[in-house]
Image 1 (tube, rainbow over the protein chains, first blue to last red):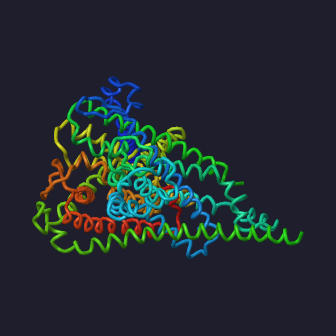
Image 2: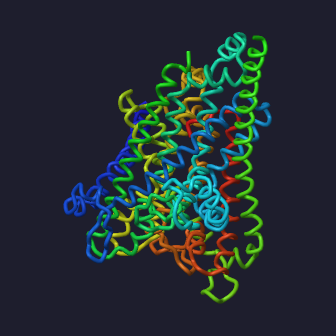
Image 3: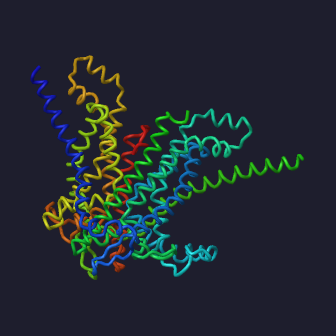
Length: 306
Length: 286
């Protein structure tokens, strides 16, 4: 009997050590980034967030171009991915024959498994020329009067980055939304159809509103993924720290700036400024993801749409 | 009157077909893009892949041939060490939070795992740099393994939890009723039943870091040579693809496609294996 108790005691000590390591890693992550960015935080203060001069030679760092590029590329991607993701979720859950739905679902979810460096490679050599020669001129011909579609069309630009990000986050929106829609009990559709609605009307005005918070949460999770994406964006956004209204101009994101410049940063302040960018990205990502999970939890706590 | 009613009905019917058609073409379109990317990678990469490509180190620019052998070895070493570290921590934390932790602590740990899962990999790379590169003044494969293990932990924790929760409570009660101690119940009953789910989580975690590049830039850093010492800068497959892709040389672009082919095959194989292992059970939480 004492031997058994001893075994349990030893096992629980090991388990608690593992839990402690996990907690230490998480706390260490915040602490280390905070300490690392301290010189920059102290030196630039809040100015860091809204000044756009990024000049390693003069040791002056303002992060606005990166913040702008991150936010704009991710929001465009979210806008596109929300449409594509929700509509395809509706098709897979409501309209498609079961086997087609399963096959398409697997293919779209596998898209999420494609490594970002492969997305970047494909974006750089396949999508970028298409954007430069086909999509760009077409958009310019139709919407050329808008400032977003003016100026020289580069291949690697904000638009290409947004399109690649769209592909990377569609699976997130699609698979969560599909599971939510599929979870709505059949009787709601039947009641609506019995009142004389079309199938689309039943889905659009009855089923989709029931899972709206969850779908919104899925979009937040997708946005979080787009904000933090590094390698694919770095390869196709052009990496120029300037703010331009045109989507055809190169941009820069927080993550790409860190990826490109961190190993070349020489002064302590430069390194610290890059770490502050990383800390900023970390905080934003966690907040967005937490908000997304909150919306999703609301749906599941209510036991699905009752 | 009836004409107007009819046209209204027609309009609703038309809008029904239009929206269903649009949703169908979008989902087929997105699925087709996956096939297109895979196909493109296969066609562009197959020419570069041969025995030398798999077994040689990179040649300098201008010297034909060379390969990504050291990158494949490096990926294996880096991910192997990461797994050795992440698996026990993740597995035991998952077990603790599901079976032993008091309620509020379990919620805190679950929340912590979700927070860690949402941290961008580049930020985790910075963390690994500050902890394991900067103090020692040199890049190392170990620091890359550390970054990868931090990426893997939350995945392993959450899949361990859901795998254990899927084990029917009756099975646990039966084990206890037969006189099994708490640990015997855990090791001979719960973990045995939960093994496929835990394996799935582990495979997904390995797949996730196999496709990951960002944290390697300032941890493993890359190398042109065969390196097996984890305390040295080391080549890694996805990092090599990145370096080759953004270089200005055609000959390196071809090698990048070859590497991408290997990488995409590895990751898709891992994902499909995980899917088959866990078929029918929900993976929505992943």
